[in-house]
Image (cartoon, rainbow, N blue to C red):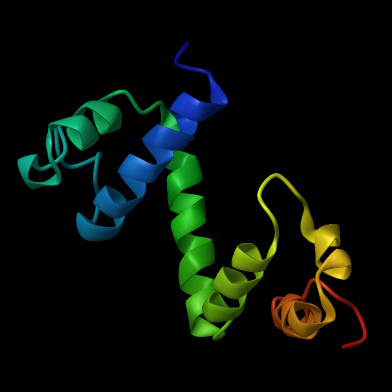
Length: 115
């Protein structure tokens, strides 16, 4: 796998987000991640590109914004309702017992107009 492979970038993003959330100012003020995150996380963080760090910071800001607006739980529910490998439109094909809750979650997240 190359460093630009989406799976590698996803691993780096998964590693750097908790580091950025826990260590304010990383990596600008610190030469390397704190050792308490473990060697795999440390190695992934050290391999992050500036674009990876920018993306992680943007993701954290979106998460903070969603939490402020009480949309985080709805987003987590909605993502859990979407079958693996499917997109948001698949909620219309869910069993009726699951569909209403998924539609409400999508509306809470602002992904459906008029609800």
